[in-house]
Amino acid sequence: MEDNAKSGFRLVFKSVKSATWYKDLAKKAVWFHLILEVAHEQRQVTFGGARIALERGQMVTSAASLADACGVSEDQARRALDYFEQDGAITRATKRGAHGYTIVTLRNFDAYQRGFNRSFSADLESGNVA
Image 1 (cartoon, one colour):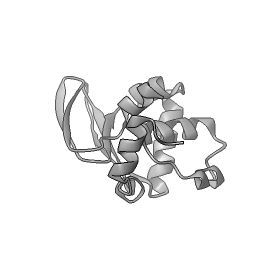
Image 2 (cartoon, helix red, strand yellow; image 1 turned 90 degrees about the horizontal axis):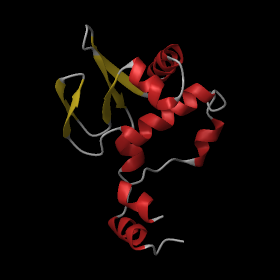
Image 3 (cartoon, helix red, strand yellow; image 1 turned 45 degrees about the vertical axis):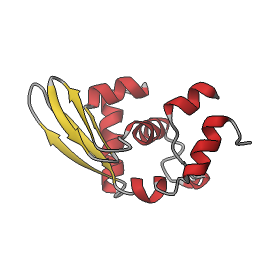
Image 4 (cartoon, one colour; image 1 turned 135 degrees about the vertical axis):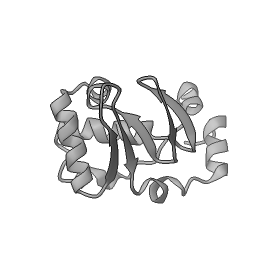
């Protein structure tokens, strides 16, 4: 528990189990990876040699890096992103070329993550949460 508390946490509602894509392992892997990896605040990252500014709820990736991180094929990663974009869950901005990348934005990140209570975070870090 101690290591988990140090690396942060994200809320995931149990109702996600009723989503039409939930039994698709590739989509599930991509979705949970996105939730866990998007920025929790503004930050600068380096990806493929480019310096990129990210806002809260965004991450930079490519089909190849997403596939590798999720244990799926590049085609499955692309199809999952296509699905979530068509569903309205994400938006994408892509820079094409030899050092291309995609910035993925979770559209409702704040709506689901902003409800954290500072005392809950403190309790979690101190181990007082059952």
